[in-house]
Length: 321
Image (cartoon, rainbow, N blue to C red; front, side, top):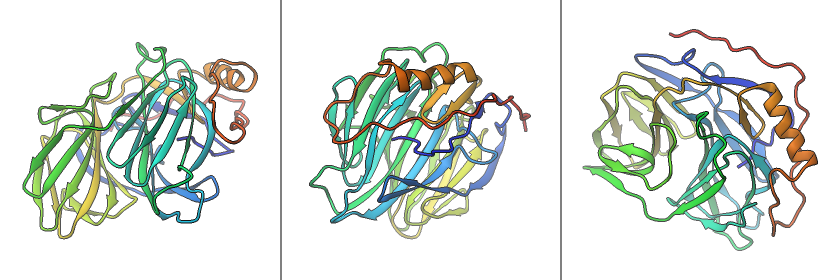
């Protein structure tokens, strides 16, 4: 999915400056962003004061939207660089096309994982004949310097491992959790999991104390370490946890996001992650004036033009808390 903000700002992310080295309970409020004509997303990352969680650098939550008789998601061809996109659905379908020639329909609780590496472009849309409701999350993972120029590739996994406990099913999206490993390719120590809690569930999920974590609420209402988390909000948890208490009085859906704190400082703008203003500027020029990002074939419409790039690079700031 694209960042369609026509006033996209440069953000300096990563490093240890914003990492909290102890357990905390920091509730993040989303920013509402219009995505096309009929889809509004709640943007949780980057957030004021909280730029990343491990290598997770971008989190949008959308729906559930009633798109019966509507076009649904319509995101024109656009570029990516230096990151992975993770498509995750609870309801509906998304048709993925990319400049590699991939054409896949992603359905609920299937992993659509696109590694942009040095350069890729793609589009996302609701199929012409689609389900009534659309509900999901789109996430980006920053690639470390050693792997950010890899050849672009796309993975679609329909079967994913799960960790279970009474009242809890944790479907592993990316990385490792409690001995289970996702088939999706990861380039940093990371975890992403879809948590389904049944009514009356009380569970403790094992965590890695060296990771920082956050929990995104998808549906229902659950308590995460005693804090009620409503749909479309995210609770940042910091580091130093070996387990996470979860409780739900009614059925609820959550996403657990975590990973080793991302030590490298990155520059994120529009749909690019780089290491300098100059590198971002080159990527923008590459999309607008060259064939660097390839061509998405089959999408009925024009590709997305890049917004204007701010002329001044940001300076890293922030201290370890």
